[in-house]
Length: 156
Image (cartoon, rainbow, N blue to C red; front, side, top):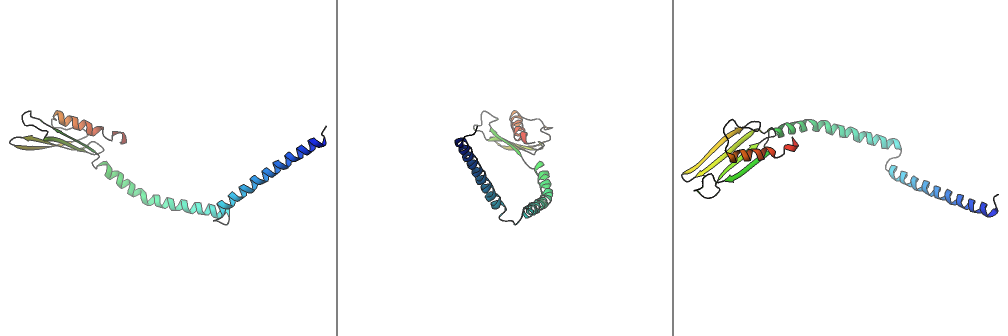
């Protein structure tokens, strides 16, 4: 049996619940109004989003050929560089000789070697195709080539 006290407590709880619900509805309406304040109706919001989507697609259409050109150019540009200095002769002193490798994405490129000697400097160039040379490589050249190929190999 419901006593007047229980009725009063249940009525108070219902009143508080309805008040909390009303408060939440009021807050949600304020948020919705803030979101749609710039546009008169939700249709304007949809139209604005559609317009921005069309503009984004237009930009993508313009950028696609440019991106393809840059990707093609990057495959043949120098991406991997290796360099070391060394002393090929024990009696000349100093690491005045060097090996330089310049490779593209496919490990094609050139290797330049400079040997410093007392009577002059000799420079040799070797082509590198797919990470290998048809000319014999010195230990220093092999090391530089191996290190060059290892660079950026995770981006291929």
